[in-house]
Length: 254
Image (cartoon, rainbow, N blue to C red; front, side):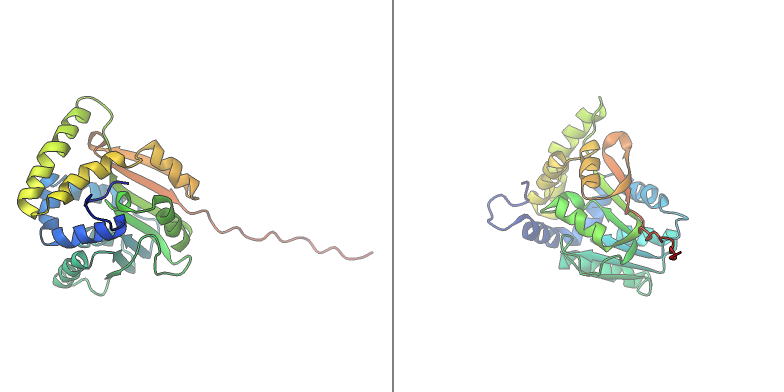
């Protein structure tokens, strides 16, 4: 299992929370800098896939500072709930949402992605950006996402992936293994965080492998959409509709 701090005995979940607490003051700045601002475009393209689907309630898992939740307002839901295990990230997210005057639309709260604090069949859509590779148990997290999703609801996941073709594969490998950790260390003051990022991306079962896990836990109508040469991927899935009971005709005795 890939973890941020290899010299610690804590589990991955605790380490990921500590890591994001550590980098939260510089997280938004580094996100946009290290991706050249293209992460904003990725979020926009992903959310467009949910447009005109009649979605009224959205759960944003691993919401961080709330960027994906804010982007999701473009599909005009009645409410968006964001959850995260990092108190530091949530603090910055709540301040951002307050400054934008969006507190009536978006609520952020602590929440474990593998044990979501919501009832079954609660949301029309679940969204996650750059969070599922940080799950301690991927199948458990996806299974709980399916549980809180309403029948026929949508699950939209945006995640880093590994480019498969020349020259993007070679360019991305050099950038992620050499440039990204150096820049992250200089700006965030947490060298482990931006060494962990490329390691976690490389270890993540992306593309068809993720789709296999997605379908294994019960999602249907799945789709994999690689972007920017495969640096990032969108995964879209649905929860099966509720099966209506079949009415048997009443047979009267002769």
